[in-house]
Image (cartoon, rainbow, N blue to C red; front, side):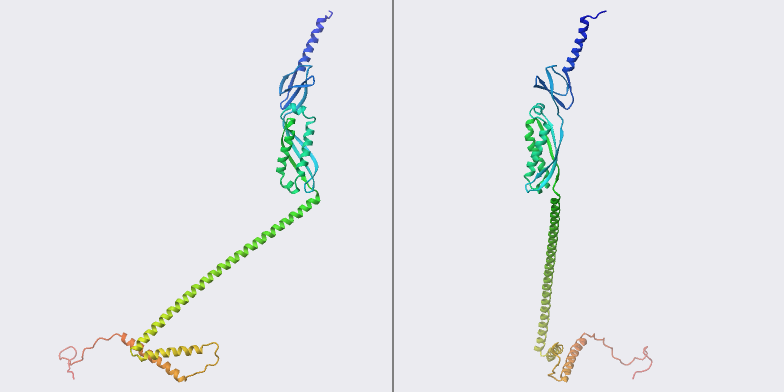
Length: 336
């Protein structure tokens, strides 16, 4: 049976419909956005999922990754403010927020971000000293992030982070830094040692001061006690002199002899015990001294003997012995 024209047209139409449907249905994966161009002009953006376009009139312009992306910043030479030549590398994180701007505002988005980051690294780090670079890395990262994000804002992207990975000074500079660090450590050690010695000297001075204060207080107390003792001794001597004077006024000559003999003997003892006297001249006879001592002994014996006799108890009186009465138990004979 011969084929007719209608039988040939139906499969062609079915095939054409399938091709049109396939060209008009687009699937966008999660995390991506597609830009649609009609006759070369941007018209709209396709979000993730199933979308329809006009076949043969619309086409996909750019497929953009909307997730956060990482860009490695290669090593570059940087001259610091104090003319130190260092090698620096880093890393940048960015995210596309506006797909049409990222697709049509800049050509070669990643290359533009890379060059912008490298240029600002040289600008920011070149305005700082080496010591600031090594000690203020967080401040450098914050400043780079602010500058690069402001410059890339018109491209429809957001710079989320810019980090400096390594800062490598030259070897001779590292040696100089090591010597400087060693000198600083030795300086701190000397300062700490000096402060320790000063504190020890202050403590010793404080201890000596307290010891001197306590010694002065002890001497003052001893002087006070000594003065009090001398005062009491003077009071005792005054009392003794008063008693001797009273005895003299009562006509007791022995008290005068006792007082004179005592002072005479004390004076002679001081002369004999003097350290700077090697030869003692006796201005009196030895018999006079012996007689004086004997007189003192007699006076003392008389005084203390009278006192002892006065303090001795009186014995009871004995009955008189008389004649014995005959017939008593005392005896049978007569008394004479």
